[in-house]
Image (cartoon, rainbow, N blue to C red; front, side):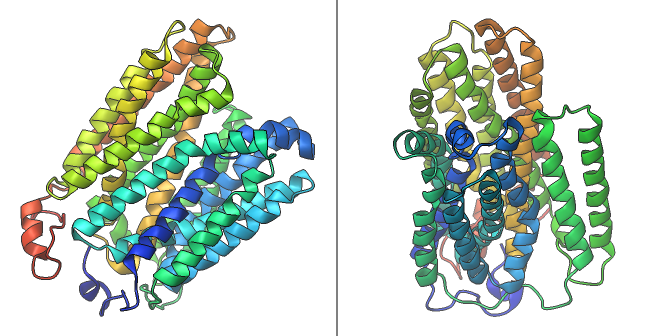
Length: 494
């Protein structure tokens, strides 16, 4: 990351900035967003009976959030750069909290779907703004490594605890609390951000916005997510899915063409996509997201449908995954002071792939200790090694004026990867299982899905090896010593 002076004139961190509170606010935001991605799942049966959803309509409780969140992330990142990270974060938190409250009071299906869609809009604004604040507040050195490590651990904890929290709330407090739970978290994050994040002028130029590029990019991303999330209803080869994905591809191709030729302020600068750190980290992130979304899906199904575990117990048995990610993130913090980002991503990807390969050996007569706990710990430690470094790699050589855009791009690649991976690997697993739902057939299908996840991670490792620039911690330490007094990872001269 270039320092504030070289990127946009004077430093953007005002004297009143409180980095500790900023980190706390970003951590709460990430935990909230991660929890919200999964907290609703176990409440779906009660939601269906309580509000009278049809079988198809119920899926939109999930899809409405995924659609607006994934489709608007790029635009959210650009808006954060243009109007100020703090301002957009506060607005996004307010929108998210209000949407959660309205969704909890829903009286009919349309109310809840609208609330979930509004949650996605708020998340698309606050998520890249929060990550951009982390990038700007901790531009280099040990503080940056530690901040991203904490962000990684909180991100994983939210994802792992979301299912457990959702199950407990649904069982003991009612389904409405899977929506209400986000209100206090949004309020806490809002208070922390209000007190701890300093006001600063927007970092992006004030030129005319590229409205056409914004429309094309947002519409293309939204259609892509829309086509993928509906593959449960329409097969990959169906005219509906093929037509939707083809339209998304046309819109995104037009978006790229407009971004390369526009004289206005583009949604994504062409130079940003040409940056090897940005392109390599986002490609790695997309494949990592595809594999990890499938991991929770297959592991939870294996526990319940093959080993006969109850939903609540299955949630508890997946908790070690969160602890493993925290361990991996802590190791990444220790190594991040001395080891190149590229090396950490290669090592983390290989460890995660090994865990998936172990998962792929699951069988109908397996046990929790051998077929779930062991591979969960290996996979999660590898995942923890990757999480902080991939975020740092995606923003390490980005001008601060593009911090929000780069953060939105990274969040978008994770979301798209998760949607694509879950749909593609789920289809492959169910195809392998066939019409017979015996434990042997189910275990074989889930094992195949995990093995394919290992293949995706192997490809991610190759991307890190061949695309990401080599880094030199020693050269970085010399570069930053006068200004920061701590090492920072920067590209070597090539």
